[in-house]
Length: 142
Image (tube, rainbow, N blue to C red; front, side, top):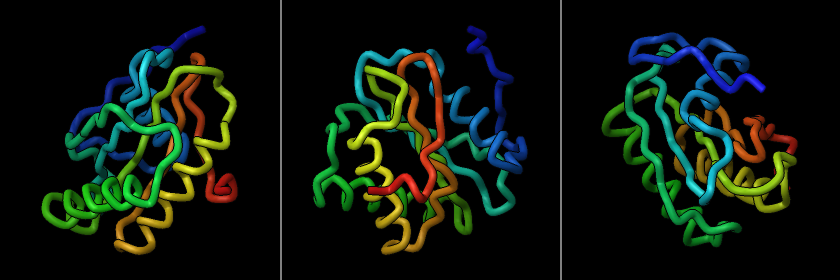
């Protein structure tokens, strides 16, 4: 299994779904995480890597309303203050199997709801687990 990816640098264009998946894979590093981490990375208004990436540790398995609001507030604040017009790519790193779980879907629903409520663009949500990185689509919300 080849888990190496091309490194991304600030200013690199991330133009499509394949490049967002490559970025998520790069940011996840080894995709056999031992703890739950939500890594947030911002793209500018032209879909270029900004170099802003924040790994958040101690992510609960299922997001409560307070968790969703806290994460949504952080994402909206960074976007408005540091990357106006930009978007965020989120990578949920967790131990376990690579299949998408009900908890992953709950995070998808929570972050997409926060994006709509707080007016930021969630340009992708990915799960890194079990040796793979996979996207969670809008229709995977539940």
